[in-house]
Length: 222
Image (cartoon, rainbow, N blue to C red):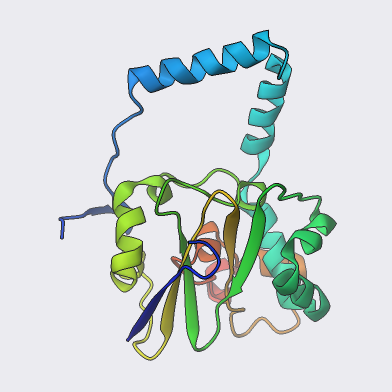
């Protein structure tokens, strides 16, 4: 068995589960923190640093992003070797083809193989590649996932229904404010000749975080 926690690029308690997802409700931000956030925002608007329209547009942009975009990117990487090479070597430039600008953060794409399974966490907060995947799922932000993913990744994966063979290495990548990660899942067998639109149906949000594999063809065939 082999697990590694990736610091090269960035940096026993009971667990209740529901639908295979780790659950432990974190406390809501304190009233003082909410008041401080509102006060700072209003001050920035008053000083002309930002406008209320800027805030609204930023919120709309974030909320309009969904994992469907990430699925299209993965499907193209599966189907187009040249694009995959660019995605792995210079993901920020490759994503420009999809109208995605990750700046000021950097995106690192990590590929699942027969020998390595990757999963992503943010141990400090909830850093996440929102321009590609949209808003992170609630479980990704919860303290139990953030702490246990590093200590016991295989246990977390099993809670998501993902059983990684002992001979396969599990690598945990810790996102931060400067660097985000996206998992490129393995292309399922039996998809030879599929076009990118069809391939994208196999790619789930969880497979791009690394807590599950891509769907099998039988899972999406009518």
